[in-house]
Length: 458
Image 1 (cartoon, rainbow, N blue to C red):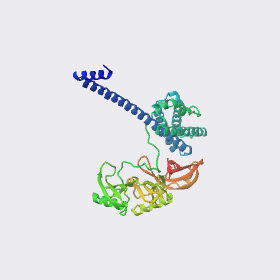
Image 2: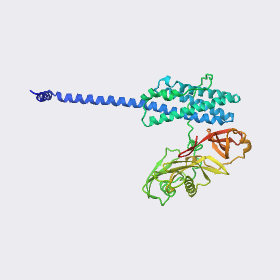
Image 3: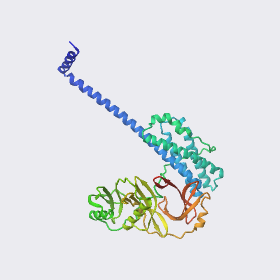
Image 4: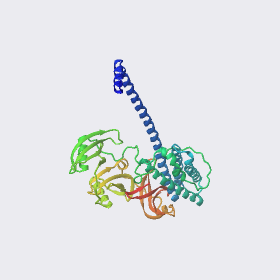
């Protein structure tokens, strides 16, 4: 009997004894169980990878904030604002160190970075207490801040490079544990020893904005939402008029949204070009909250000045007046421009509107007015108690002043404050310093970033 005959005989015996089905079933169960175990293993591995990614990118965000805050502290002259900045550095440093410790890297490889974060935290806390006691920051301490700033910038650059490798899959966490010394171990502190200060810390919100004070929107009732309640048909008419009757082919969908901060009708429109536009109209008053449609812009034919003019014309034609452009972004040939309300030559940064303009035809492809709707009203602007000349005395002498004006800016406690807005440079870095027009104190400092895609502030 050959091998083939033996296999057939074995299969027939299994059939006779109903064993063939049992063997096949057992085999399938084993395969399924193996696949399940493999899936669970991969899921756990991915969950762990996600946890490491979250810790890393949160740490990267805190380190970026530390770098920014240290730069701001170099030109701050007001003790109160300086104490606030140092307090923020202290908290961000502790949070960065906590996330750093959660990464799967041997502690000896990140010892220098951990030490740098600890010393930054301790030193900033020490200066906070010193400022509260009304003791001035010495020249030696300013030199130490500069040193910390230099190392923070180096660390930030390393983190950016490492982030790119992780995002693009060129580096995994098991590989990072072997390469960690190349990135995290390169940081060496040159600052003097600081007293060990034990302090609790808590989370603090991020500081990155796409325009001054653009994230100030609160849970308060929107001030500019006024008028009678409208129905769906009225909302469709308003949406068509806002987008442009000549651009709308038909309205294809209407739904009500009650969970948003502003109850609204969400409307979908098909344009004459074939694109689909989405727009939200408030149920009270019929105000346009936002509008967006995606448009591929292959060629840039307009300048940013042209786009700003197109955006201003659009606002005026929609009954929104006294707006002036501030900062912008230009990505994929779509310019997104921030506009702030102007009252009596005072820039009101609380009342913000964003307009997106296609840089080939000048079409308006996006509109967002939440900041404006939540904050806009006619203000009773007080007479400054501090003159501009007096306010300038509170500026750091290193600031090379380029321009000045007046602005109303929102505060963390949901109030607003009238300020002098001074724009200038320090060592080729552009800054905006806000001096309280009533007290003469520093209210805020922003760094202006001229990027290839536009002007941003942090």
